[in-house]
Image (cartoon, rainbow, N blue to C red; front, side, top):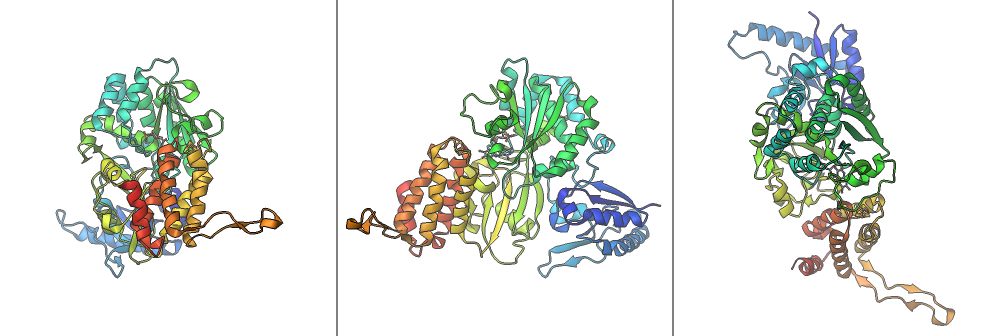
Length: 551
Ligand SMILES: Cc1cc2nc3c(=O)[nH]c(=O)nc-3n(C[C@H](O)[C@H](O)[C@H](O)COP(=O)(O)O)c2cc1C
Ligand code: SF4
């Protein structure tokens, strides 16, 4: 019997050598299925045979894997029919701390990383071939769309509201309310726009979703179209995702008739962080400069080409087919915490042992994510900080790791869930440098429309440079030979500069038009608040500045 070998064709697995590995198995006469990724990135390229995983694997491991599979199968056949199957690892490879660093014959679905997840958005991850309509249909594909067509627009919107689904792009706005606004706004032409710009550092869930299950995203968009009366959709993807673009184009061709009369096209963004902001994205889609538009009017009222438009993130739309399937909304809202309903595909990145995609109901703590699931730092050194929510997210100190993944808890802690990216840093990180980086990032990516962001971020970099060097030296300049070296100002010490930085952050927070300028103070101020020793030898400087703005 031909051995069926599953190897992911996700871009990360391919970058780690999955294509060469697949060819090596094919040369041995195996039937190779290129499936989506399980999301255990530290194990890629991962080989799966009969549910057992081997990874990271190279072409040199092929014979050993096939031998192991044959002996596991023999073991399994020897077991009594109602006894344990032979799926137990025969030769697991353990790290000194006991965490499996290499998977060798373990049943993938029994591994801690997979078994503790609640996979609703990524239910098919690791299991199906991304461009197989047959696999999609056989695994509950199109059920949501079929039911949506039966129940009609108002009931679809009602289901989405009932599920409690909130936008996964960052702002956490209730999807049902947005859809209802578009439904209720008159217009001969309406649009569904999928925001696949995914610019946040440490995030990759959109990419994995588009590469691994493109039909699910298309189904979600077709349901949105059905709900609000839109027959045209656009997926705005960043140019850095060529594999996702290729998969989406191919998938759209394969399902034209299934989604008709809804039509959908892919548009490629040239690559600017601010083009992920929805109004900037709409300008870019219209062929204009990616500059933020003032709101109101909301895109739901006056969006793409001035028409009512739903703009939703990939993960928001990916959650919809499950919600629309029979009983899906109630099931979805049964997970989570408070007003944060459902599941969140969390992305573990940075200096972490088990990097990857972990989907779980809201309410999980950072401690569980970083240590229990993530296995601590990759370097083995103590964790110093974790940035949650991309480049505009706060740096969270290990003392705060009991914070639960919940929109409201994070807001109360002056932090962001954002797109669910978690970037871990060990104790070698310099938090002043990270604060400087946040300001520099904002200065590079600013669309330039408003002053607090455009100018404030440049000044922020300068202030942080001066804090690093202990303050501003007394300046001198030459006016005329007769008043040589006239003092320009009296100089400022590090404490004065920290006061200036906090003032600047307040101005950016309250004076910026969009969240790029408005949220850059989050990483800066959290770094200052939690690690004052990285900014100044005298923590009283920081206390004084914080008392003034917070007191
Ligand atoms: C600077 C900036 C960048 C953003 N980048 C993204 C992005 O890459 N992807 C995304 O879905 N939303 C991004 N957003 C949020 C969008 O403006 C918008 O809230 C989102 O697309 C709405 O979809 P949702 O309700 O499904 O989250 C960004 C916002 C800002 C201010
Ligand atoms: S905050 Fe920055 S990115 Fe946003 S509108 Fe103002 S200048 Fe543009």
